[in-house]
Image (cartoon, rainbow, N blue to C red; front, side):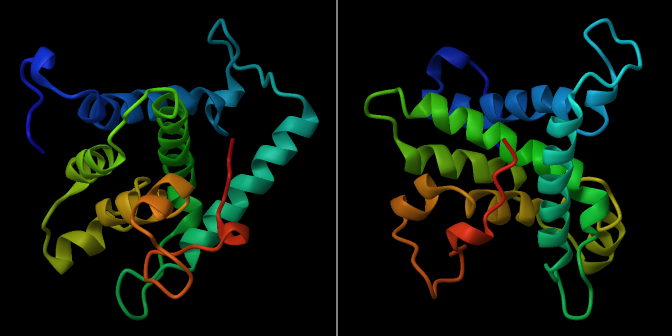
Length: 177
């Protein structure tokens, strides 16, 4: 990832992608299964209504099942139950920033999506990837490909349609928030 350096020289698209999505991601942890256990004073006190908690759990389980179906390599599936919290936060951070971007006239979505991908670009050996598969964070390439295919802004910009590798049907997308 290219360092941001002097922020006055960085485009809004790069700031939104590299800082905004990350900030949205981290804030959303206050509303995930762990964060929801603590109230505004930091005390362990589940503050959601039962209905809201059940609705979120259903969506988080759907996202975990989605990740369970991903095979980074033949015969090995992602551990959806392990990565679902971070995967939820990835989707939340992207959704928040795309809503903000929609209000900005002339926003360059191509520059934004490329800057976002730059965050997670990495090269690793299969051995390292296997070790990281048990981490609570999805593998880096999934944090790009899986997150982006859930959003119309990405699919429309790159003219991705049914039958294309990055296409994800609307009914298969998980909308956490």
